[in-house]
Length: 289
View 1: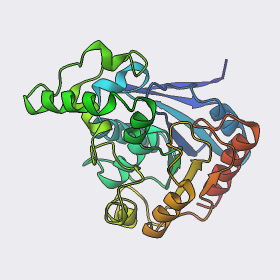
View 2: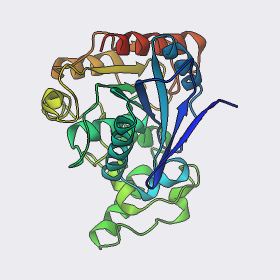
View 3: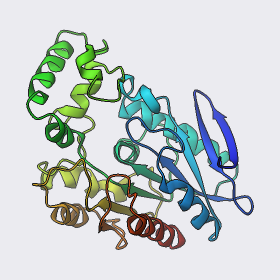
View 4: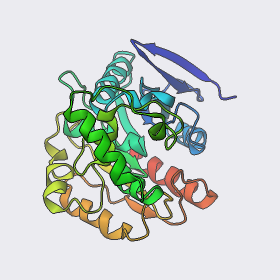
């Protein structure tokens, strides 16, 4: 059991980890598909480490958390993140850093690249395990992935994009209900969720990573920290992880030099050394803001 405070914020909620005292600076953690607060093992350790520097950790529970992701969208997630950021700022948090894990990284990029109209600025952003769902699908079920996408695209074209797809789709993802629109968003080339695929190229990186210095939801002086898992189980072996991260760095004017490919890290950075690297880099990053 982890001590903390539960915040209800409109239709969403957030869990603020307890510390040695009140925190005016916080990392807002956003999990991936199927995640909910306390799903990712390293977050408790991260909260303890940041507390020593006067930073706290708040875990967001958006309407897409748990089994809700298949009925939601990045646009909706970004709007709800904006609600949480505004709430925390009104509660006296002077610095707020977004930290996405897995598809939470897409949420973070959506908030920075396509901010909601009323999205408040954050002091910085962190991407941990920013992987391509499209490439992960091709890795996990290569024989059926193209056909499933074609069926979902046909449903969208027929005006049935918000209908829940048949059980064969849910069987592949945590038994979650999922609409045709969300499947296409995840599986199609340049779908709404397609921020990190290795084949997108320089022009795409320039339009996303390259424009973060002009994002009104990233405060002046804010930076982007990327912690790519070196042994991520959802990345195809053909992807050169270091080359991919280097390409993002070359495009991004607000890139943090603390960014790295984390040796030995699986998707959730569960190995002790990988966890230590993630926690240490995040601590150094926020300390410098």
